[in-house]
Structures are given as structure tokens and as C-alpha cells.
Image (cartoon, rainbow, N blue to C red):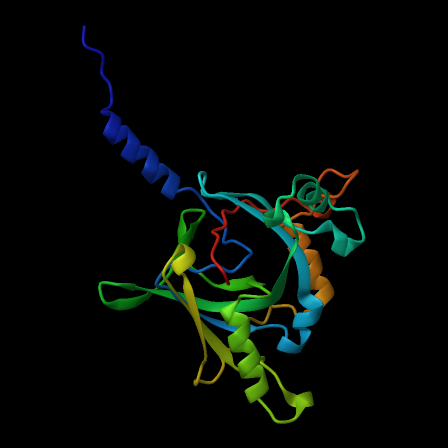
Length: 244
């Protein structure tokens, strides 16, 4: 008697469709795919960048295409860091803490080219298609971020008076082209009037808030503690080794 069995490829495609249709939440850290551009507003001035610069540990496994370590350094909280100890004990220089700069932004929209037309990028939440929009954290490498270079220039050009320099009075467009080591980001100040921010967005952001949120989503590992999860469970997200 023949046994009814689904074709393996049909089952494979059915599982792929099911995975794509899962309810998802937008990530907290800002990310763009190749060919996308985002219209954003900064929520902290460039002058706050020094206070939002923290030690950060990341170790990428190329074979698995994922980070095995992706965490803020416990030393910024005055604690003994597990990753610092491992880097020293094993001589793994890639595991040493590197400086990252974090600035909160509000993403008005993300667009991508489809069939020669710019369309809004979306994600699915509870089976509802939504535009990519909302509060995000911009993570930039201190020594190599081209975005930081562009912000420094925009900040300096905003006013001859040091006290009046700002990147908060305009929207910016961040574009991504390429992937991996060939990834390039371009930043331009929007010439249009800045878009309104949501009325329910918090009024003020501080370096202390940034520090707390980064640790919340990328928990540190401290000697004698589990992994900093007393600050909250990190959201699940996959990071790519692209240089912001």
C-alpha cells in the first residue's frame, strides 16, 4: 500500500513560507540591507558622542556567519569583564574591547529599489505588514566609521559658534551599498524641512540612557555574574560584520 508523502522540496518551500510569516519585532539596533536608504533624525547631538563611547567585544565566526561574542564590556560598569580576561589569557586580540559610539535615532522610513521604483521597506508583526519606522540605536566603530566622519563634518558646518553646533535640527539620509568588506555607507543632510517626530517619543535622551539600553540589548559578561541579564534579556537578532 502506497504511503502518502509530501515531496521533500514542497515541504522545504512550505517551511520557508512558514518561517517568513512568523510574527517578528523590529530590531533595536539600526541596520540596513544592501541598496536600502533610511531617512532618520538624531536624538542626541554629536557633542554627546564622547560620553556615548563604550568598550565593546565582538568575535565573528566566519564559518557560521554569526557572532560568538557580541557584548558591551563589563568594565564600563566598574566590573571585571569575562571577555577581557579571555582575550588576555588566550591572546585573542580580536576579542579585546574596541571603542564603539552609540547614538539614538528615530527612523522615519527605510526605502529600497524594486523594479526601478523606491518603495517602503516593511516587516511583519502579528501577520500585519508594517513599514520600518521607530526608535533605533546607531552603533558605529570609533576608528573606522564613515558615518562618524560625515557627522563630524555636518556638526562643524552647522555653525561657526561652537555653542550652537548641532546635528539635531535636520533629518539625514543614510544609504548602504554592498555587503561584507565591500559595504559602504553614505550620509547626507536632508535639504527638506525635518519631519515631525511622534508625540509619544520621549522628550530627552542622555548618555546614561544610551549606556543602559546598550547593556540591556547586548548584555555584558562579568566575573561572578551570569552575563548581565539582571539588566534584562537581550532581544534575539543576527548581526553582520559590517562597519557602521
